[in-house]
Amino acid sequence: MTNANDRQKLSDLFREHTGAAPEDVTSLRGDGSDRRLYRLAGPVSMIGVAHENRRENDSFVALSRHFRDRSLPVPAIYVYDADAHIYLEEDLGDTTLADWLARAKGADDERRKLIDSVVAWLPRFQIEGSEGLTDDVFSSHARFLPKTAEADLDYFRDSFLGLLYDGEWDAAKLDRDCRELVRLLADSDSDFFLYRDFQARNMMVRNGALSFIDYQSGRRGPLAYDLASFLYSSTTHFSTRERNERIDLYVREASHLTKFDETRFRESFPLVALIRNLQTLGAYGNLGVRKGKALFLRNVPAKVNTIVGLFREAGLRDTFPAIYDILARIGRSPRKALKGMHMTDEMLVEIHSFSYHKSGIPRDERGHGGGFVFDCRFLPNPGREEGYDTLDGRDTEVRVYLEKRSEVEAFWVHVRSIVEEAVRAYEKRGFQSLSIAFGCTGGQHRSVYFAERLFAHLSREGKMCRLRHDDLQEDAD
Picture 1: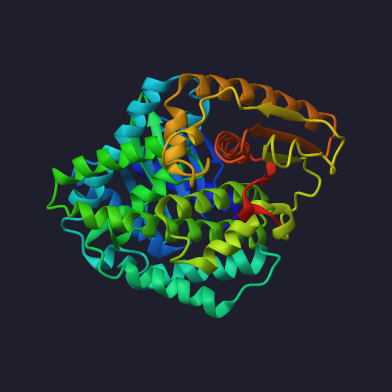
Picture 2: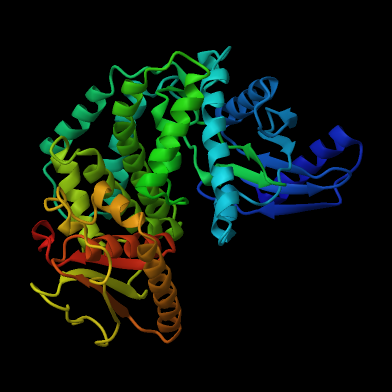
């Protein structure tokens, strides 16, 4: 169906429903979906959707009506022409939660309230929303385990490693890791509604209230999956402390709605978080390379860094060594390890951590010899505290220790401001690289923490970054 055909068919449907022709039909920007979206203005504004996948349309419309019957905040479906593959739904505005968070500078209390509201609504969708659902409403596999989990891991191998990774891997070892991941999840309770794509881009904010969209890929699955999708999404960034607070909030809310095995939930959370994030890498490869949407490729370095951090937080490195080794290699040097990124003309931000007493200030051999060196030695040193000697700045305990100190956050605000201004200016002037280094006494705690934090921040902003910890032995090339 062409754009002109979409407009005509949706206009006819609008006229049949309202008795008046729309005053205007405007095409709306989509993200990764093949659905075509339009805003139809008239006596009431509506969103028109055209999509040839009849099964997905049927599922979205049926789920929307089911959820609204249970007072869950989803768009009203005004009229659905299944044979024409079009429908009209409630106009929830233009602001996604991802958009709102990107603009919410300094609105910490409001941000916290809105995010807590997301977490509180989720178990209602999963538990109350699952009541009365039959398997025939789902557009794909009716259950996440094991078929969807296996398909997600195949997606990671085929669409991410196969399309983007410029290196070799041991297929047998990788297959062992994937089979072990599915096996460990085999006893998860999978009778709940699984939203599948529960992320900030699929939530709308209007007058301070939330509505939820894009659940047409839903199925039955474990409770932990959707929470992991949200807390590890590329459009939101939570510190370890914030993530743990939201997990605790979720547990309290879900416990009010169903008999809840908290131990099983917490054990399965990092496993489903790993599967979800690997599936996302597959989606980035598919959308970026096969469908030519290069914007998605810019999210790859940050997502890889997130998964490597998840391995460390959850102690999964020895459980899935083949997956970890590949992603750690990519994280150390994404431009070198990835092909087809189409970013060769973009400025590369080289980020280092180092020890003043070991390797010393790193030399910028790639660019113009400039950049910044930030001395972190004046900040509180967790290395002097008992129990921190075997940890580094990527570990949860170290991050919590540092983030409790007000001077650490104040230092970060200044660093971020300086670096952001420099990156903008250097990009305008056509520089190809910028070096930024953080140093501390041993190159293990404070410098590593800030290098990781800056890498995550700039990667989320779509900047091409390379991260090196010069005095952590495992990161040596």
